[in-house]
Length: 398
Image (tube, rainbow, N blue to C red; front, top):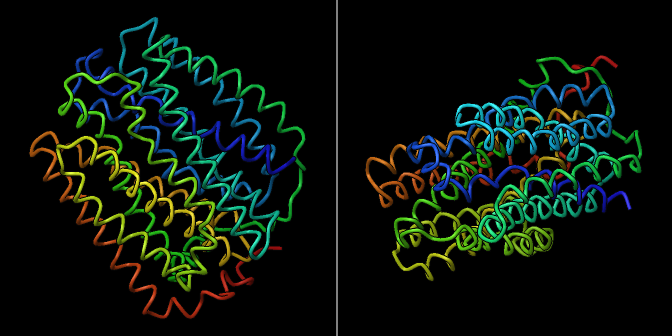
């Protein structure tokens, strides 16, 4: 019952993040802005996701994850209505940006709470399984948000999706009352030195670096995909754009079987390297003008991305014996910091130099992630995989 509630909550949270992505060509035309400016509707929401998780990770060392999660869900429900009303009643693109930024402040509270709740309720192989389920739920939410927005936009109007999502979030707020209020999460009072110790440990920093790079590339590609499809097809429908994100469904399967893939490849870092290689190579295929080939390339692209993500989030939680809120907060911070920069900066290259140079830029970032992964595998970090010590207990105030 509790796992079902957590999974449902995760899906709904991620449904709120990406709906504007499918509509970026619409918003660019509606407000007469450039592609990179329209892309700010996605990028601006990730800025808090790259900063706030640290503070929420700190808070979660002292208060209930469930309490923070409930208020975040209620706030997200209000944000959906505010976005629609702002679009209907004003002609201010800046106001939409402000609302998305405010929504972004709520998302890290929800995400860090969910990850901390799950990690506090799990151990060993069950932890990897539950984290894989969590990642699968994030994928379902990201895909559903895009696809359902596209379908409703074409047939009844995109605003109806926002209204329906508001109702579901309110129902979820009530359902969260069934969760246990206290979980086995360390409640020591951390200080800034813990962050430095976490990053100095090497193991964490390399995992964070990998996930920063891969989400930089992933966010950038998917954010500018609607504009690429518009260039190839003329004026594709929102539902067709939404269907192009179907590669997410491969990600669901990959994330659920990732514990088995870790065993098959011999270790977590081997699975991550395989995912990175597939992710990097298939990126070159996306320079094609054949939309059917592009669609199939996206299946491999998304599957590779979520193999890396699902294994990495399980690995970082396995390494964390204490301060899970802070460790997860840092993970989310690095992940979405990559998303912030990736959602906007490569777009400037796309506008000036076109799709091919854009892809080669992302390819270079993938190369950096592979270098980091190999330093983890062949450096001292590999010796800490099995039960590595994390943050010295002396840095806690019990």
